[in-house]
Length: 158
Length: 195
Image (cartoon, rainbow over the protein chains, first blue to last red):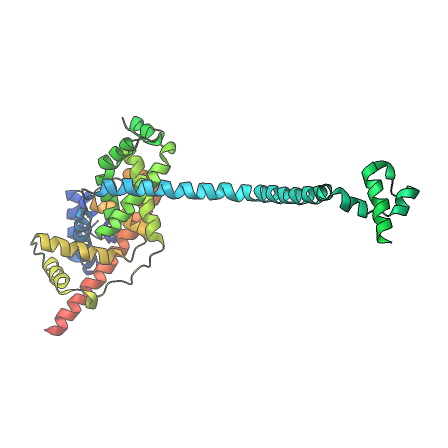
């Protein structure tokens, strides 16, 4: 190994995991190879800083559990709102069309039922005496009172 | 039993989930500390881990330990958080603080003066050196070289294949050693110019 450069050995495994004999061989080569001596020195310092960095561990604060539980409740509450909005999104078209149909039906029923609310006098004026006598308006459907009204109203007008 | 605790938590038992958080938060914090130095970031990552774990409790089948399952979620969460972050340029002598400069001189002279302050200086220096690596390579290096984890342990914690772990660790080790070598050489040059 003395003649072989050691950089690959240094990069292959953690310095701390090398055996005593492996380390001795590296040292022996570093004594006769300036480039490898520089690499070995850098590997040693790198190993120290990495070990020190690995020792840094931040402990959880005593309030961490409470914080997580609060965040969990918040998340669940936030999730329930989108669930309602998702439901609304899918049902919106159906609800809108139902509302529109209801409105149309209400309007139609109002229009259809409107003539039934007018008085018999107003209905009678819609027929002329001639048309009633000649039976042009299907007077079979007219009541006796309507026929009389139509005839006398016509006469009074004249 | 972990599996019972997980099932109770999944069924909406808040105290069971609180117990999971209490029991495993030191482990999750330890994983997050590998990636972040600021307490606020470590706490943010750890909270994210537990919230994710809660939604994924159904996927925990109890084949492995709950701790191992959470470690994997923690590792992936931290890696995701770091994925978008920019890597810093390589550290140069002019970037070193006075303390870091002094600490490096002691290392070059092979004078070991362990102290809490010196350890913190070394950890800060490590952070700045490691910031040139990808979060994945940094993770592999810190676990293997820093925590003496085996290749298999890293593979289990990350979900990577063992060969991938080896490649990442080799690449990271080489990059850090070369960066350190350049730093030490330029420091030597600066010192010899000063004389």
